[in-house]
Every structure is written in C-alpha cells, then in structure tokens.
Image 1 (cartoon, one colour):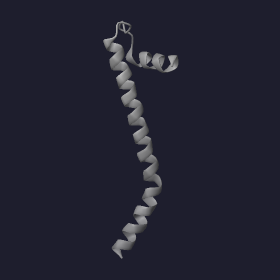
Image 2 (cartoon, one colour):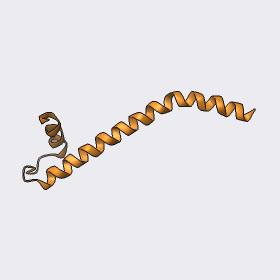
Image 3 (cartoon, one colour):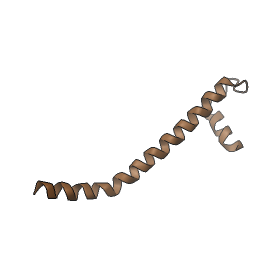
Image 4 (tube, one colour):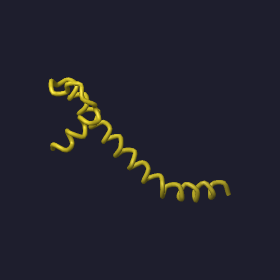
Length: 63
C-alpha cells in the first residue's frame, strides 16, 4: 500500500518538479554568464568604477 501511495505521490510532484528544475538550470546559466561578463569587465580598462549590474545590462544591450 505504501508503495502505491509513493508512486502516485511522486507522479503528482513530477508535474511541477520538472518545471522548477528547468527554471533553476536556466537561471544558473544566466547567472554564470552575467558573472563572467562582470569579471571580464572588472579586468578591462573600461570598467571605471561603474556599478556591476548596470555594466551587465549595458553588455547585454550592446550585443
């Protein structure tokens, strides 16, 4: 009986879990790209003390 309950419970959780897993993967990729752009901007001469978030938005809009 417990095996049946776990089977149906995991099936109902799976419907939502895969959406959250894909979202977490996408956000982690976006975060890693943003961090790479920020770190390369800090090392370059054009950074000049501007805010990191504004620099990231500028890089995405210029492409």
